[in-house]
Each structure stands twice: as structure tokens, then as C-alpha cells.
Length: 134
Image (cartoon, rainbow, N blue to C red; front, side):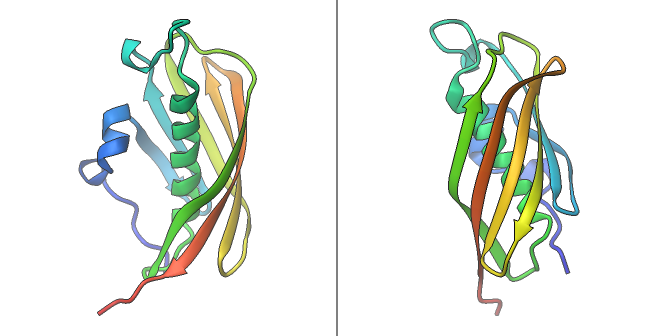
């Protein structure tokens, strides 16, 4: 049985710091969003690449999480990101989906958009492992 995704009050400190939210996460798909503000910009006044990467990583993690059983966890193995356009302001939206899942590895794809334009594309692999349940 897939596990319930954390509620906003239970998000990790890092995702809270970035202002990420997960309005959609089910059936191997997820959407994560964040509002850009001056704290998330680089010296060129565009979204820092690490911010865009983090958004994609979190969205892909949420997508694979939605497929896990109660006794499973996942962690990022690798993410490849291609930056296509800069983002200056507004909302960043990342749509992620599982493209393949085995017993131990999930492969995902995601796109990050800003004002409807694709600004980055990613692929990622996540390790799946079982945890002991007392």
C-alpha cells in the first residue's frame, strides 16, 4: 500500500527554507512549486541553478515516494539537469513522473517551467530500500 505523503507542516527543514510546496503527488507523478524571491537569485538576478535543481530533485522524490510501500524509503542516486532558459521572477513549477521502477531503482523525468516556458529538463535515479518496522 503506498504511503501517505507528508503534510506541509511535516515538510523537511530544507524544503521549508526554499518555500517549496507539493500540491500534487500521486500514482508516480508529482508537482512541486516555489515562488522566486531575491533570496533565491544569483549575482545575475536570475534563479540560482541550485534552486532549480533542488526543486526538480524534490519533485522527483515526491513522485517516486508516491509509489513506495509503507516500509520503503528512497534517496537520490543521481540527477542530470539541462538548463534551457533563465528565470527572473514568478513561480517555478516542476512536473515529475516515474518512467521506470524496479525493486531497488526508480528512474524519473521532470520539467521545470516558469510562466509556462520550460526552463530546465531533468532525469534522475533514486535508490529504494526497505526499513525495519517494529
